[in-house]
Length: 175
Image (cartoon, rainbow, N blue to C red; front, side, top):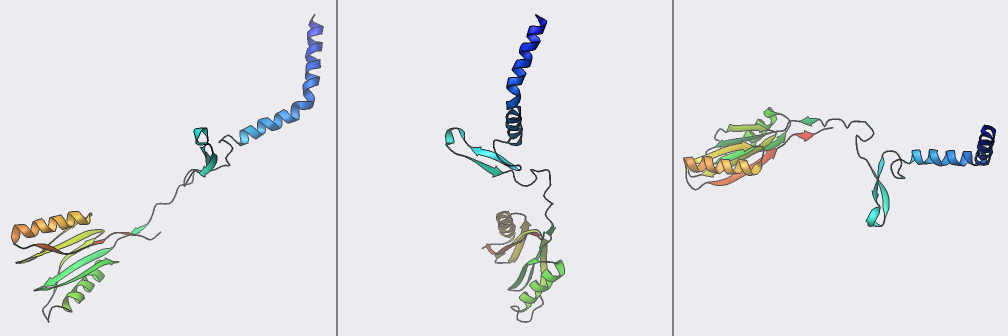
């Protein structure tokens, strides 16, 4: 009986042996397409009830590589005033250049009066509110907050306040 079982097993193996290469190719092909018939770095989309199928890239970092951190450079702004004149600067690479530009612009409108830097700021916004008794300012990362604070500061000190100037000098991506 044992010989008969062995003999039947050998016969079965002989019948399967010609089909073994095809079976191996099918198994290897299935492993290579483990992501739903999409190449490396892509994932399957659509299918199911959508009626279509496709592949989409996995995006940065999907293959294990990390996207480098962005490099940001500080940007400066400044406001200079004197009686009835104002000069401004925004988006400058240094505090010194922002202040110089603001003073220069103020001097051009001051009828010879000396201008002073009232506020220098970086990587944020500034707003200047002007009222009957002069100007007040505020700074904030958000331009609307800066305007709200400047108006509030102005209304606490004087009357007829309105936003005269607002700008932002946000850090700029350089790489």
